[in-house]
Length: 251
Image (tube, rainbow, N blue to C red):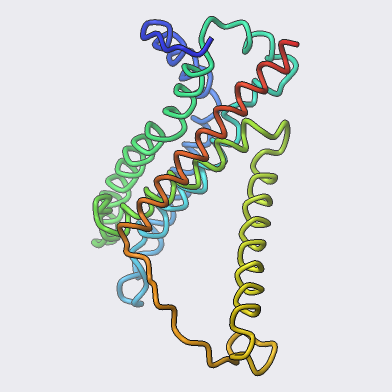
């Protein structure tokens, strides 16, 4: 069953939201407390020439906590005690996929923005009352923060697929897989450069060369299009993996 039915998806999404909320409210309070302490006791970031606090705290809350949360989003798929309920709940693969993705992706981004804004306001009120100064207010729509949001969606797609594919320790295994692939690509690039530009290298060190500059530099729009294609491809692979996982459980 792969078709999409609105009322059935609505019931599934409410169920998933109730199930996941039980796991994240304690983590939300813990992260909010840490952020509040950081905002209250690190008020000299601008004077020291450092980035504003929200430029460091918000990426940690969004990307760090978001990837941890995403790594557990399909825990019931791999848990023998919850697997029967996971497979027998009346919904399609597509509905389950969209529900979990929306919950851990766009909805989590909105949730992180709201929680961080609330912590920011409370910290500013307390700091102004106690010390007469406060950290710079967060600016979620500036260029840097928008880039952080885009980075989260890219990393989230990889972690979302890992949460489906790996039966246990999805966070660690996905991170190790991404790092291994990245190192493999870098090594392949270095080997290819040595093969095609062998005469330009005087030593084994990459910096010791007289290699000409590349004639083609991709445009930002082309890089963005390539990133979107890769993003869609990763989600497609994750969806196919979910279908295979359920078929294997049913056999």
